[in-house]
Length: 518
Image 1: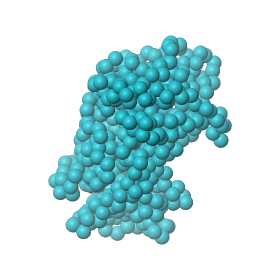
Image 2 (image 1 turned 60 degrees about the vertical axis):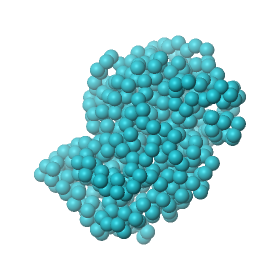
Image 3 (image 1 turned 45 degrees about the horizontal axis):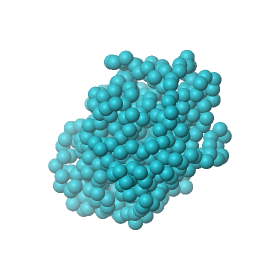
Image 4 (image 1 turned 90 degrees about the vertical axis):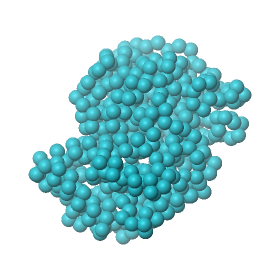
């Protein structure tokens, strides 16, 4: 799969202990009419806009979720916004109501990224119980699984055993035979998606998911959308602001993507981001007594990591599972997984130590968490949805193996450890059965209320330069910088970041220009 284009938050801490004096904010009458912007992406005809009115008139029938203090509902959205009468998709929505004290501000939608991450799971496992108490006091915390994801018309591709085989395919081909094997794997994955998900596959773009969020906003009775999006969720939020600037409320875009970058540029940027994170890990590792990469220097640690992965390419090591060994592909994903959160670095040191001793279970466990593989061998639909959305949102980064081979040196320059594999992993969309409907473009969202864009200086998955770029593109963007490691910043240990975002969510006051936190 394509790890450069998987943008999601790391596993969150169990809870946050942040206090902030609650402010107040105005609401206004809810807007329950669809809007078609002539200059916006995928502009709708007048007849299509009129046909959307019944969707905007929905009200959720809340029911028990089976999770204490949470309610669930199902809303409908058109399968094709250009032809609203040609079928529907069902969207899974969940909420936990504002706890008080203080006047309720409205709903706060959350999205953890992906594309393909379940927002409902994120709400129930973390945001709805772990966001700062003052925020949960004033907002109904709400999530909707985007179309194609989890409970909302999920994209289906390979089954568990086939996914096990797919994730083990060599992604650093050394000859024509290995290249053919890799391209065959991409084609098989794409064909399975087409076979199992033909109806929904052309309609899981980010633009369509953003339009769905406006239907959810109207169904909740909110005049404006208040939203915290992490990682890919920042692209979803920015797209909403582009489509509906007048309905944009308080938007936090944490771990920002840059919508103006092409797929190839995005993948190469992210390759460099993972290299930045790895060098930060290596600098920490060489100072630890148990560092499996030695204690000499970052340069030496990098060389040792490259040699280790090359050895696995030649000869995988056992993992304790008969049909799954730890080769270079799974080991690389295991290492990349730990780059998302510096709290995972001790686990990575231990997993590397054991793998270098011929025991690959630790790195395999890290890779399984990245792919959302369950102990019984089933996978969530994260990777299927991830490919479906990415391949629809932009034309492929590369269209032929020859084009990848020519670009490998630039990727290896971006990351000596990950570059070659991540270049070849960028080929997947070349064989996608549905043509892309989106293109790279700047998002300005003229007329939107202030939007807070958060960037982490050593973020592996969404490099800091993207946050700077998005904040500059948005007509009302404000950049909040976190000088630190890991992916995303809100709720990850910086009181400075958390206080700034809480103030914005509760009082509507964005941080001052140039605000930096540690």
